[in-house]
Image (cartoon, rainbow, N blue to C red; front, side, top):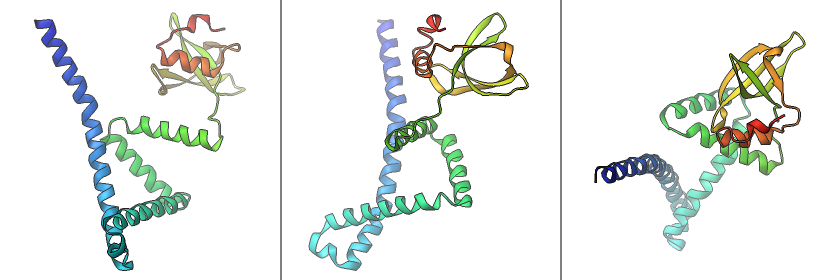
Length: 196
């Protein structure tokens, strides 16, 4: 009976961990849409569309205003000071919304795929740390004998630590692709023993 109650408690906590961020996202989305809906209603009333189309005009004009704002924001981000503001806002959102950075990176990767731009491919290496080897990505290599490597924190391949080490501390995996290392990191190291 105690094990059953423990499982019920664990499931309830896991459910809360899933639902709370979804609820917060829903509330934020609701407030953002409410803001644009308010101005959509004013615009529809100003142009007289609310008399003809009713409530639908409010939603349509709210959506149009939102799309226009997104479109022109794309131009504004190219200006340096607005880019700095955007970066500052990103840093604040990362602090207050768990999972924001991960979801942002996923969205950016999807946008790059749609544009046909491939993300940079960093060659896989093994980094010697004490008596063991750790899988990593070779980010930069200098003729002075120093290299920059990124060691991912499994299962997230884009979160981890950066090290600057001497070349003799790494072993290049010339027969292994970046995609294979990505897959292995996501599966907590499965398949790494076959890398060459």
